Amino acid sequence: MLAAFVSGDVPLFLRMSGHVQPGTSKFHTAVSTMPSSAVKKSNARNSKRTAAPPPPTKETMGARFYESVNTYFDRAAAHTKHNKGILDQIRACNTILEVKFPARVGGEIKVITAWRAEHSQHKLPCKGGIRYSEDADVYEVMALAALMTYKCAVVNVPFGGGKGAIKVDPRKLTVEELERITRRYTVELIHKNCIGASIDVPAPDYGSGQREMAWIADTYMSYRPDDINALGCVTGKPVGQGGVRGRTEATGRGVYFGVREALNDRELTMRLGITPGLSDKRVIVQGFGNVGFHAALFLQEGGATITGIIEWDGAVWNPKGIDVRELAEYRRQTGSITGFPKAKTIKDGSSVLEYPCDILVPAALESQIHIGNADRIQAKIIAEGANGPTTAYAEDILIQRGIFIIPDMYLNAGGVIVSYFEWLKNLSHVRFGLMDKRFEEQMNSRIIATIEKLTGQSLGEVERKLIIRGPEEEDLVNSGLEETMVSAYHEIMDVWHQHPKVKDMRTAAFISAIDKIAQAYSMLGIFP
Image (cartoon, rainbow, N blue to C red; front, side, top):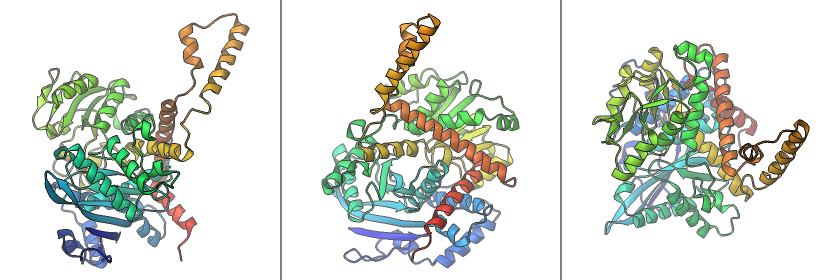
């Protein structure tokens, strides 16, 4: 097994006693000897260049994603007055763990590579999902961990940023193989003190879900039987295993709340030349997984018309609208959205990103809107449901064209917001609503009885039940999510108004995050 801790802005793998010598992997030889001064000079040159790079490939996507995140940070930091050392600390990825371990796959022994990044510990625990993907690399993990730091700060969730990845394709593994790999990865995190309710709390991400989180929780509890808060070591669990109701839909519902709030902003809609509200808006959604499906569903229920859905194997398009539930049922039966009889199938799904619409929701993977297609995007608003779907170079083009971008670090924060609620539930050991549901129902009954007595009129049974009903756990979770998303939107817009030179919402969101994190570091002080 190879395990290496990485620390700093660019990975520097350190030899650890008892482990394989450094330099045994491609990443070690290519990156570990690169001095930080050279990296800084390279970054400086890159920030000044005018020639844009070609569209990212699978091999370069992680590094380009990381570059984009740091570019966004640098642009926002230039509008602040914080000490350069504090800004450098905020920007740096504090710790990265890389592990390599053997696993039996298809009757053979294969070496699995996995990572866990802890970008910032200004608030604890660190928080971020675990991605299962053959395309994962350390740069992608660092970029996602950084975004988690800024995302939590933007929506006022008291976590530092973290992220993990296992370099496998879960579709090519049996359930038994996937479980063994997941549990072994968890053990590696336990051994390196990179998991725990007060240390680092993973969650689902691309390729993982409730099942994998339940395996992680069970493994952790087996190794830490004396930890009373053991269930808080991971979020996104099934409800029966300490999960919270509303977590599955949280990210998609958060996308809906963010888009709705932006379209209710009359100053913004006037500037974009569109009418307020969702009722007449055409929407294209890229990705029909958990985030894409729920975002499309809630936007449709809010009055929007879903004209296009894009998946990895193609897209479906109908300018008159697509019923999201019908499409989901068709995919459940056939395994694909392509061939849906009530829409036209487009073989080149990515081309639908360029179709006319009011709102484009990229809710799949990063770097989907890039230098190669940014000048052909026809949407008026891009609502980033995925992490990093727009590259920095593409964003420059989109802003120049007057396209408004609701940034990922705000818009897809619904998942971490509700993960925060789940974590609180695990620490308190009490279900939300348990202590007050019946009390509120009794109080509501008394209020209605008093009103009926004073007016001499009685409510119907349906109305009575609707008004008396006390909140369930999911009601409270959804209410907390809505309040957090609405408050964060106006907080970002206030920061934007305070900085007239800022041209986009993403930079305003980064400024908001940087200010909060810088304040935390300043108040904590520098040790020793």
